[in-house]
Length: 333
Image (cartoon, rainbow, N blue to C red):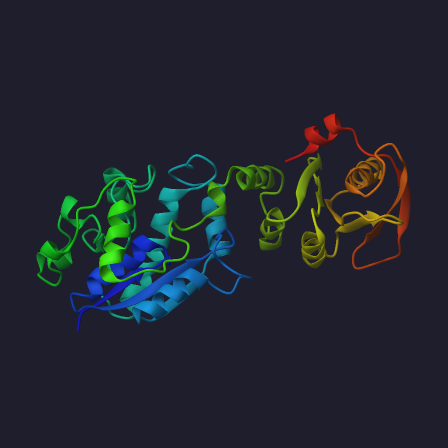
């Protein structure tokens, strides 16, 4: 039996594309690519949306954790970024290359993707799709069932493996055709319908740019830290992160590493702060004044702030007034 590989994000488009090929009697196995930038991924255990979709479609799912390999693309994409720091075209090429390698390993014949012509401005233009096929060395082997009849026939279509007449001609950004098709096929639950990538979020993108600029050899832990708290650039080599609630305070504490400093108010309620980088006397004073700003006290009162080097070498203390709003905003990332 002919076998195909589906790039299954768990969004509606990839579910529909996979279903259309399954209905032609073709065996399909799904792949899902996990990075630290995924927004529909709980606790780093794989994309729950992709697994749920594969289970409902009754197909196997292979998950690839590719964060570290992907960092190089985020730092220096050949085809540039989208509206934020999302290297969409390079991302597609990277993942198609990985999928092609797995396709050959399991002797599959072609790849399926839920891409829709014209839906996304950077990666789903006609010329961009050709670039992806060329650079991933998959000319004629990427089938896009939702828009296939608007595109050049692929090899499986030309060879009669896939009936082109049973494929679709959807284009553009409206999701009404997909929603109607889902209704016709009895698909009523499609989590994370448009996918999710933190690199498209303006706030996260600003933090990521700052990290690339000031620490180009960043680690997975550095990226995970970007997802939590308020971030401040104290100096080119010094960052300070402050929790916004109990959950974030706990998360920051768990992400703190061996050379980090942990800050907190001594006698009033307030946030946990994590200092990372090269701290001097001035930096300790600034960090403490930020803790004072977000602590439960009158803004004009001085409080005692404790700090220690992790994993705990004894507390030091400093008396601090709240940082001014002007200075705070100048440091905010």
